[in-house]
Each structure stands twice: as C-alpha cells, then as structure tokens.
Image (cartoon, rainbow, N blue to C red; front, side, top):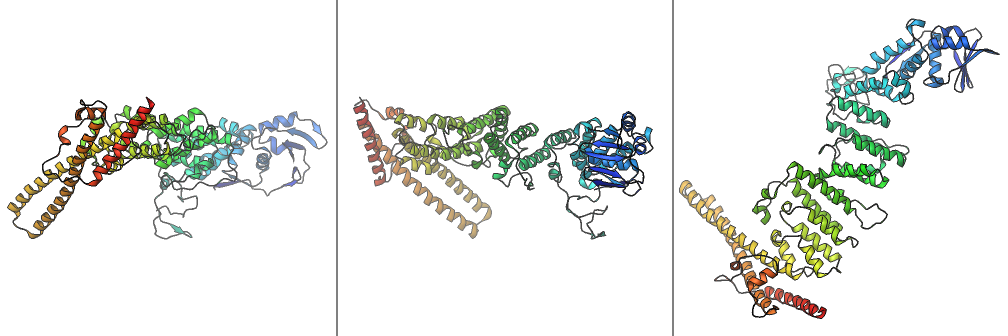
Length: 634
C-alpha cells in the first residue's frame, strides 16, 4: 500500500487511559474533547492550522486545566483527530489509503486551508488522493471502503464517485496497461517488459494473461450500496454485460449462503467465494436478492441458468417480494432451453404442500418461454418436416424442441406424486406445442407413469389424458410397449397397432427405394470403375444385410396384417349395431383415419403367429369386461 510521510519531529504524544498528552516541555493550555477521548494540547499549533479551531478556542471558557472545547462530529472520531493533532505539531506519521479519506474530510471540516498555513492538510491529503491513491487499484478500493464510515462527509467532497470512476476505468482496461507490478493480490511481480521477477531479477518467463474476472473478489468486499453504485458506473463505462453479470453472480454467492448448496460447473467463474464468519440476516438477504434482481442484465444467456434457479429457490425460501420472484421466473423463461431436469425439480415451499414439487412455478416459466418464442418468431409447425415426425433426428435440436424434451422428462419425474391432480398434469403437458415434439415417446412414458401412480382414474379421464399424445409420433419401440400396456384404454391400443403397421410399411417402402438406388449406383460404378474386387465385395455385403432387414420387416408386416384382419372380424362380431357395422365405422369409432388398403392382406403373406392371436384374445377379454360393466351401469 502506497504511503507518504508527513512531519519531521519525533512522536511527542503518549496516551494515559482515555487522555492524550503532548510532551513538548510546556504545560498544555487547552483540552479538546472528541467523543470519550480528551487531548491535552496547546493553542498555538492548532489555531495556526485550522479556522474552526481558532474560533472554538477564542470562544472557549477558561477551566482548571485551561480552555476546554468539544468537537463532537469530526469525521473519523478521536483516531482521526490524533493524526490531525500530529500534523499541527509537525510530528511524523504516514498518510495512507486507509486514512487519507478520514483526514481529507476532517481537514475540510476543520477548515485547514492554505489561508492558515502553507501546504496545509487539505492540500496534502488532496494531492496524495489524486496523484497516488486514485492511480492504483488496491488503494482506490481501500479508500472507497473507508467512505462507508463517513459517507455524508465523503459525498460532499465527491470522493466515492472519484474512487468508483478510477476503479471502473481500471476494470475496463487491460490490467497490464496500468500499475506495476500487475498482480497486486498474491501474484508474481513483473517487470515493465512483462517478464516475471524473482528477488528483483528477471527470469525471462512470461506471466499468464490476466482474465476479465481478476477484480471480482476485490469488488465483493464493498458494502451493498457502494457495490451497487460501482456496478452502475461500470455499466456507464461500457463494460460488457457478461462481465457485469459474472461479478454480480460472485457477489451474490458470497453473501447468500443458500446459493452455495448446489454448486455447478457451468458458472461463468471458477473463483470460490470467501466464506463469511456469520451469514447475513434473512432481512439483509432479502434486500440483497431484490438488489441483485435490479442489477442483473435482463438479457438472454448473460446469466447462467443454474444460478438463476438458485436465486429463485432462495427467494422462495426467504419469501422475497413477489415481483422479485416473478422477475427471476421471467429470466429463466427466456432461456429455458439451457436448463436441466435437476434445475426444474424445485420443492414446493408453500405451507399447503399440495404437491412435492412446485409444478405451478414450472408452468409459469414455460409460459414465459412460449411467449418469448412467439414474440421472437420461434420455430413454426411448417419448419418440422415429415421425416422428423416419423422419427429421424435432425442435425440439431431447436430451443423449442429441447424445452419439449425437458418438460416431458419433468412430467415423468413428478407423475408418481399421488397429490398431483390430473388438470395440472394435463395443463403442463398440453402447453408444449405439438410441433415441438418430433416424437411423443417421452410424453407417453410420463402418461404411463401417471396412470400407474393414479390407478383410481376413471376410463374417461384415462382416454382424455391419452389424447395428449399422437400415436403417429410414437417410435416402433414405444408402439410395441403401448400395444401390450394394460393401463391404456382399448381405443388407444387399437390406434397404436394401426399406426405401428403404418410405420413398418413406410420403412419397407424406404428400403425398396434404397435398394433400387443401390442397384442403379452399382451399375454406374461398374461402368466407370470396372470390376474392383474390394468395392464389389462391400456392395454385396451391404445388399445381403439389406435383404435380411427387409425379410424381417416383411415378416413383421405380415403378422400385423393378419392381426388386423382378425381384429376386424372380432370387433365386427362384438359391435352393438348388428348387420350395419362396417370396417369404416369401426375406424371412425376409434378416432383415426387410415386407408383401407393398409390393412388388407397382400398376396404371399406369411401365416399369422400365436403372438398376434394372444393379443387379440386379451383385447376381446378387456372389451368384454367393459361391455359387461356398461350393462351393469345401465
């Protein structure tokens, strides 16, 4: 820390209890009382340096030990007046960044101007402040910290603003361009050329380049009001929003213990906040949360999503201002595609404890995301092609698709909660647009878990819930599982079976197309490249693999066609309207449209296996039970 030595005389002051005495050989003729401390001094050194002391001495009444004057409101109190007295007597002491603000304010308060003496305390302290302190990061920071104790006096002299301007300038500039040595907080000293010094000798090694987060820890030592003003000054200086947000993140993590309970690796800084001796009170933490909400840039992807979820959880625990909680939800909403499933699993902190997790909060966050997507012109239904709906994955996921996948995973996690009501589950699942889900496998899994955890649901509620998913957007694996799922309504199972056959037929058609293309390309290659044994062998192997796959698909399609044929016959027999039940009416009854030729048996189809007949028998039994139940109800 930089310092300047003032005065030349040896220290003639000594302390006895709550009193200071000056041993100059002459008896003291004035007593100055500052707080609980009394100073036994002499009139002439004081009145020759201070206009206020001159007036107070002239107005003071004589006492047993001389004139007694009281200075109740001197900036810095007795400790600062001790240094002022030493300055008046010419006693040696050091002017540093730790005491310059106190002395500058005290000198102004006591009117220690050039009118009462050359190079008076105002001149000396102001020169040191401008020429030494404000040119150095550490000294500027220290001077700003001392302003907290005497802020009204410091504000009159514009000292906090000058310190903040100095700090903002240095934070927005390459650290290698100001101050030497560059690393003032524990790093190696550097020469002006930039090499690392060891005992003052250049080692030739080049230091690591300073990162933009070098000042975060220093700034976090400021009180909240001063830190708030410093950030505002830095924003006016044009410092990037990402840097500002990272500094606020560091500050909040330091003073909000709840944020450190879930530490992630995706914070924008790897610095570990210094642990505090005693955490702030809940009221102070609420004030800090509201201030953090005001300071954080309302900009997408500037603040880490995990950190925002931490702020939201802390705000809910502390029961912060509802507007503060709402703002955190909006910040998360505009970048929900960056969240993880763990982030969304926020416990319900309400007294009612209706559900284990706060589903309402996730619903609001999702609504904010969808509103922003609509404003910014997100992905439209036309942008999702048919191949993606059938199941082929695109090169990259759009934000809305990532959010849909995230919500489906969240629904699967909260579905086992028996307190979760059907309307809430449906509302959250239905909020995601249909085009956002290339496949409905995740939604089907969540619905299946919900049905398993809520076995008391009526059949109508089950059908209503299952209508949330599109059977045409289920993968073959999901269709196979759904076709054997006893928890699903019969109507949904029939739809799944038909659309599974449709997918297999589409896949076979694609395979035929690929086979024809391979044959054509093989002829072209043979015409241009001759009979290359390696290429021909590869082509033969590819063709063999393709034939095996096609044979397997033909077998599966034949089984499904036979199964559909049997089901058509059985369902027609069980139809309520005898003689008028047609296959077209049955397809309308079950709520889907499909071409009749898709279920017709092809020539040369393989005979049906026992698995298909077993599934039909199960469907018959379930349908028979439902029919008997309906008769009983009547």
